[in-house]
Length: 119
Image (cartoon, rainbow, N blue to C red; front, side):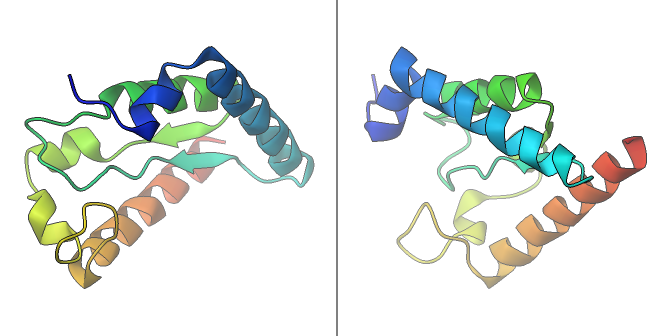
């Protein structure tokens, strides 16, 4: 039963309400500017086998999609092809290394291209 401030927030209805409202305002502002709202979820760079933050990904995805964002999450794709320890800075499961930054940047670019082709 892993618990941290992120997993607590993902289960807190007041936090989720603020998330939904914030993404709705942001999505509307992006569309008002004539752009396509794209949201890319950045996984924690921790063991994929014992990943504790899947519920957070689900909550963010649902809130983003409800707000009209094209939502992209590399977690499932990376599970089969990337090792988190190869993507992160030494001793840090939050910040990307140079290799991780390149991979994430490529993922973001692909997500933006896909979202703009669809709209």
